[in-house]
Length: 177
Image (cartoon, rainbow, N blue to C red; front, side):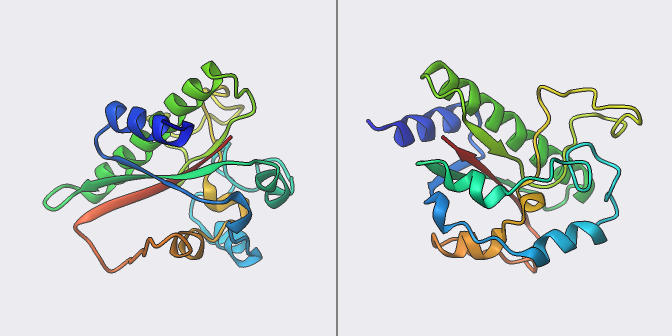
């Protein structure tokens, strides 16, 4: 069993709502217009893990330094449930699964494993603290905040995202090792 298959099995055992799909880090599609969408977000400059509070780095170069990557998907049906509740749950479930996978890779001697969550961080129940992040070791940057066009990047591996569909919340994160 290769490392991807091991991770795939472990993430499914950790949370049955999770799926994993391999992706070549060099096939991730970066676009400046994705970064501009962050500027228009109602949470802009309110989260410690979102622009403009994230490091001003070349995320495309960083991703290209990795040999392996996978998209991690959290899929939760929410018909009859409150949208905001399922939005928070899906983000936090994905975030926790990615942190779990980081630990697995750390234990397998991959100390530079990197993850990006889907959507803004929602670890703190009452939002981000004003002075500094309450969870600096657990916080992760949203995949979109790096400039990755998630829709186009996922299409390249056969995953179609539709925003019209309203019965299932799907969150996508990224792990690189």
